[in-house]
Amino acid sequence: MIDIRRVFTHVEHIHHEFGPRAATPLVRGAIGAVLTNPFAGRYEPDILPMMALLDPVGVDMAHRLRGAMDVPVEQIATYGKGAIVGAAGELEHGALWHVPGGYAMRELLGWKGDREAYRKGQAEEKTGQPGNALSIVPSTKKVGPPGAALDVPLTNINASYVRGQFDAIEVRVPGAPAADEIVFILAMSTGYRVHDRVGGLRAENISKWDGLR
Image 1 (cartoon, helix red, strand yellow):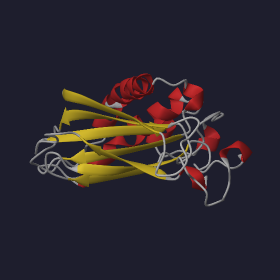
Image 2 (cartoon, rainbow, N blue to C red):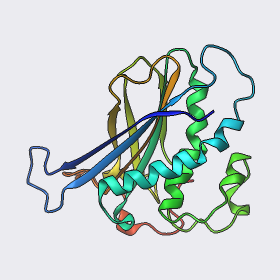
Image 3 (cartoon, rainbow, N blue to C red):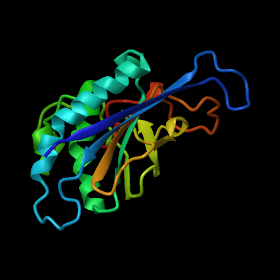
C-alpha cells in the first residue's frame, strides 16, 4: 500500500528581509514524499488502516529533514505539516497524515506521549508525560494538480501563540502529485521571523503550562 516515488527536500537560510542582516540566519526546511494513492479513483469507506502504515514514513521524513537542515534537534523551534492530494483522490486522504506526520516530529523533538492513544482519540492526560513539543502541529491540505503549491503553517513547538514565530513555508514538488498520488509534507524552522517586532509571548518565556495541544 505504501509506494514512494520521490522524496523532495527544500532548505533555506534567510539572512534578512530588507532590514538589518541577522546575526544568525533563520533556517527553514520542508520535505515532501510523493506516494501512490491506493484509494485514487474510487470511494473507500475504511481508509484508516493506511494511517498506521504511514508511521515509518513520517519518522524517516522527520529525521531526513532535521539532517538536511543540519542543525541540532534543540534548535528546532517551529513545525508544521501538510498534504497535496492528486485530482483522482479526495481531501480526506490527506487527513491520514495527521498522526504519522505530526507525532513523528513531536517524538523527534522529545515528546513522550502515546501515539497510538491519539490515533484512537484518547486524551493526552491519560497517556504519559509529554516532555517537549507540547503544541499541536499546525496543518493544511488540498486537492491539486501536478506542481501545485501549498503554504504549510509553522508555529512554536511548545506554545502555538508565540507571535514572532508565526510563519509559513511554500512547498511545491515539480511534477507532483499525479492524479493518483499524494504528497505528504513536513516542515520545521529554527525560530523567529528574521525581523519579528510585533510583540507577544516570547519562546524563552514559555512555561510548561503554555503548550496548546
